[in-house]
Image 1 (cartoon, helix red, strand yellow):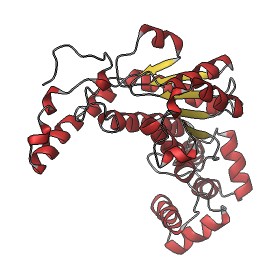
Image 2 (tube, helix red, strand yellow):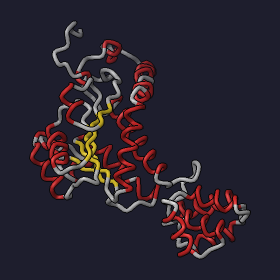
Image 3 (cartoon, helix red, strand yellow):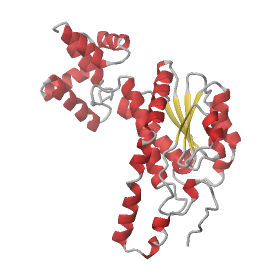
Image 4 (cartoon, helix red, strand yellow):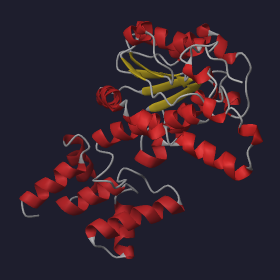
Length: 308
């Protein structure tokens, strides 16, 4: 039975009284219990909405200054950071180094546990030095328990090098952590279904937080037009089809017309739409987008106002 007083103050390490006898349940009952716990995740993330907005603003400022967003984590946290970073180029057409994920133990740790890799803060320091982290960058550490040495080592070094710093955890942050980093995001999802298994609720909350920060920053950079993914590039059959369908829908073109316009735009949906609305070449459209800070909405609104 669970003790009345937790032996570990970290919320992620405490026993969940609602699942104390989960090993006696049927398969359907296990599903119901896990689902009930999962329903606690979204409200916990919502409770951190002001901090999330602050993080998005910081990341946007770094991007506009030519900087990068770098996630640092170990285990599940590190894998989620690498996942989010790796999805930015195909989704938003960003350079591969614009959003990066650093995981303790390196690439090998993505597919198997590297025991002890998270225990060495000096390795986190080295990762920041190797990437030449600087004042235009933002480094976000992910450690659901709040204590991972590798992550804190990296963040401290990033701070020394002038970078902005953020921290994501799923246990109440200490005043020291709140004072140390620029923004601290702490969705408190409660003890896990299986004690200490932070790949579950804490991992889900982390995924939601990272999705929100990266997607929000990309939207602010003009990587979408409304809710359309216009900054993607048609680099495979699926993205070619999606790109053509976007052009067909928003410009009322046939499939053949959309494909031809996309080809003239070098596979860039955003450039294609700007070309259409400004009746210009791809080069001219790209320059107009540069002058509009990448925001396609500005170009379209201006064209509509001018009766184009």
